[in-house]
Image (cartoon, rainbow, N blue to C red; front, side, top):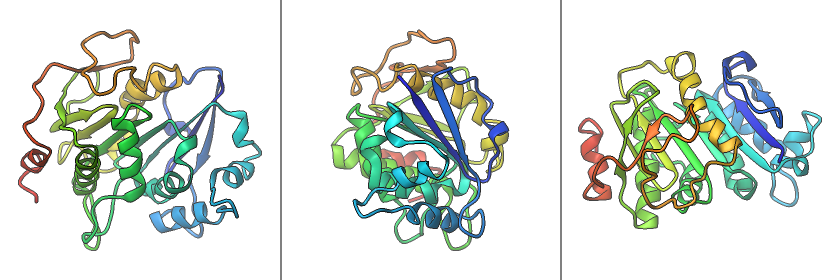
Length: 262
């Protein structure tokens, strides 16, 4: 099995501080069209949209590699990477097995859920993919905070799949303000505990070790995604204990977990 990790956003290769397996290639996209903002990354992705409505083939050819040479493709990135990742998921979700969004979910205040992320999160809930989203209170005057985007996206996906979130107790990574899962959708909301930049400077390494490596090793998605996974740590890096808290009463209770934000 050959793996590909697309690592993106205002990052360098050295920010990916995990020892990926030998069968894994990493390609870095740290510059969009004319800048490093989310629109620049979005425009880069869309510049490779082909007549068959796909982005990945042309995007990967720009790095000298072929999409068909890889069995698993994982998107992982920070901050403005959401501009690229969201478009890839709109057009090539069937070729992607995982998304690790390190405070890389921002949206307009009028439409908080990101559609590409939302649809892919539904796949994760069904056990067909893996989505990990971290969040902070970072944001802008004209767009959402990371927390608002992540919680709205997760809530929309869970509502569409008619499932309730399950609370998580976290070990092996810095403790979030709140953490929950639904299938293989994992939300780690750090709120104000860590700044936006610390999601790549501090949180990236432990979270990528906890989630990216099991994806690359074929241990995620979990085989029984709608049930808690128990407390087994078959991989030493796998630091998330699941199934140790009762399911939250309703999907709407996420709003109660979000520091009072509606």
